[in-house]
Length: 204
Image 1 (cartoon, helix red, strand yellow):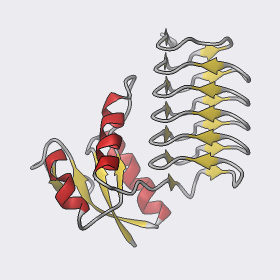
Image 2 (cartoon, helix red, strand yellow; image 1 turned 45 degrees about the vertical axis):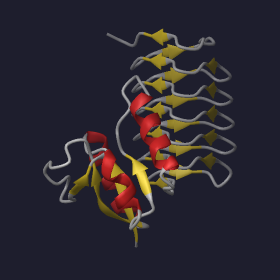
Image 3 (tube, helix red, strand yellow; image 1 turned 180 degrees about the vertical axis):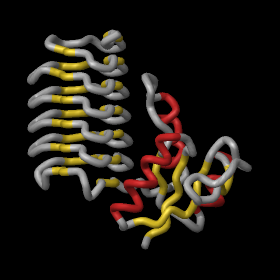
Image 4 (cartoon, helix red, strand yellow; image 1 turned 120 degrees about the vertical axis):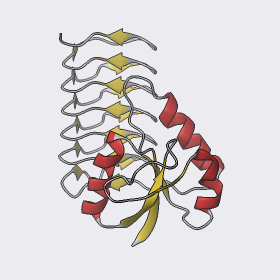
């Protein structure tokens, strides 16, 4: 199996490890994390921090951003750029328990987690999280650095701009346009277009 560095050692990393192990194409070589001397993550060693990336990539050229994205995409975007500038390859990871249509497109460094569905003619940009049980319907377009959280429903022909967060259980009506850098709270029902940088409060 191909060795793979995981960049970020928190809770999202643990979920990614489970998907990677189930998919079976890659072998987790270790974790890169700010806590460079931290304990192993699900049995995988922490090999260093961001400053060690160049050295680690010399022997393991494939890497995945495994920092989560709650609201702001800044940390994931920064690490993605750092990996690209360091010459890393960023694979697309798809859980065997997800369904990604052969007529859909997923960008590099994107992960589709257990139970996710990406339907025909949909596209998802680079460095995105399509989280557990999320749905991206036909002809929807999701730009780079987005997180479609657990159980969210992105209906047909929706367009979502870069760096947007769609919270757990949110529903976006078909054909709606969502800007870049938007935060859609958990449980929201979005039935009209949303401007760049807007925040929609979720249920609660």
